[in-house]
Image (cartoon, rainbow, N blue to C red; front, side, top):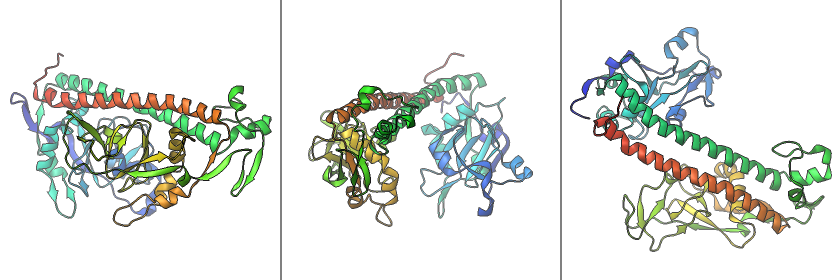
Amino acid sequence: MAGEWQLVKFGDLLISGTRNGIYKGKVFHGSGVKIVNMGELFAHPRLRDVPMKRVELTEAELEKSSLEAGDLLFARRSLVAEGAGKCSIVMEINEPTTFESSIIRARPDSTRADSLFLYYMFNSPQGRYLLGTILRQVAVSGITGTDLIKLRVPKLPIMQQKAIACILGSLDDKIEVNRKMNETLEGMARAIFKYFFVDFGPVKEKIHPHLKSSPKGRGCLPKHVLDLFPDSFQNSELGKIPKGWEMVSLGDLIEFVKGKKPPETANGPGDNLFPVILIDTFDSGASIYANAEGMVHAYSDDVLMVMDGASSGRVETGHEGLVGSTIAKLTPKGSRPGKRFLYYFLKYIESETRDHLTGTSIPHADKGWISQQNIYIPSSARLLEQFEHFSHFVRERITDNLKQSHTLAAIRDSLLPKLLSGEIRVKV
C-alpha cells in the first residue's frame, strides 16, 4: 500500500464489528428465507439475486443474521488455504436473506468506507496478503472475525474510494453483461438442439400442425427449415425416431484423445509457446504456456471434456491451445455429424455423464458409459449443415464475449494494485 494512505483497523470502518453466520439443523432447511452458502460465496463474488437454498429462522435470528446490500462476506474456513478469507460483496437483496455459519459478515459504515472499494482491496494482491497473515491452519484453513477486524487497511478519502470502485466496477459490470449474454445464447442453442434432435418437435409439428410448439412459440419455424424434417416416424430399438434417421452409439462417432502435462511451462506467452488448456482456462483464460512438441493441440471448434477431478464430465468448446493432462479432445471419426452437433449432444447428456463418474478419491469421466449413449443422426445433410451454421454463429459470439471478458479482467487486475497504491491517481 502507498505509504501516504492512512492505515486504520478494519474494524474501525465497520458497523458493530463482524458476525459469524447461522447454524440450523436439517429439520429447519427447505423453506423460509434465502441462505448464502459457501457455494454462492465462491460462485458469485459480486452476489446478486440468485437461486439459493432456504432455512427457517425466528424473527430474532433474522434480525441478528440478515444481509444488506453492501455487506462483505468472508469465507471463515476452507479445505484449501486459498479459499479461507475469500471475500465477496452483496450487491443486491430483494427478500430476507441470511448466511451460513462458515461465513463471516462485515458491514462497512458508508460514511467512512465504500463497500465496493473494500471488496476490491481484499481481492488485490495486498489484500490477499493481509488475509494470509491471519490464516490459521488446524484441521481446515480458516480465519476469525476477531483477527479480521484487527487488520490494518488503507483509509482513502471516501470520494477517492468511490472513484476507484467505480472504475473497477464498470469493468466487472461489462464482464457480467457478457456472461449473461453468453448464457442466453447458449441456452437458445441448447433448446433448439433438444427440440430438433431429441424431442423431434418439427416432425411432430408436421404430423399434427395444430400442436405447433417450438421453443420460441407456436409454429415459428420457417418453412424451408421445417421442410428438412420428415413427416413421419419409424420404429427403433428405443422407440420411435424420425423416418430415415439413424440411431448410433456415440462411441461410433468419436474418439477420446487425452491431453498431456507439458514438461516445462511459462507464465506468459513467448516464441513457440502456446496456451495450455486447463480446467481454470474455461473460466478465466490461459495462465500458463508451453512448447507444442508432443502435445495435443485443440482449435476453437474442437470439443473438450474434463476427464479427471471434481469437474469430470464438463464439456467445453471455443478454446484454442495445448490440451492439459486432465482434459481430452473428442475427435469425430467422420464428417457427419459436425463438431457442434456433437458438442450440443454432449452438453445435453452432461449432467448424466457427471452422475456416472468412476473412481473414489479422484472422480473420472466414464468413457465406456459415454460411448454407449445413443444419438440420432438426421438423414438430411442439409439439416445438419443448417444447424452447424446456426451454432457456429452462436459459438463465435460466445467466444468473442469470452475473449473480451478475459481482456477486461486482465485490465482490472493490472489496474487494481496501481490504483490502491496511488501509482495511478483518479481525479475526483
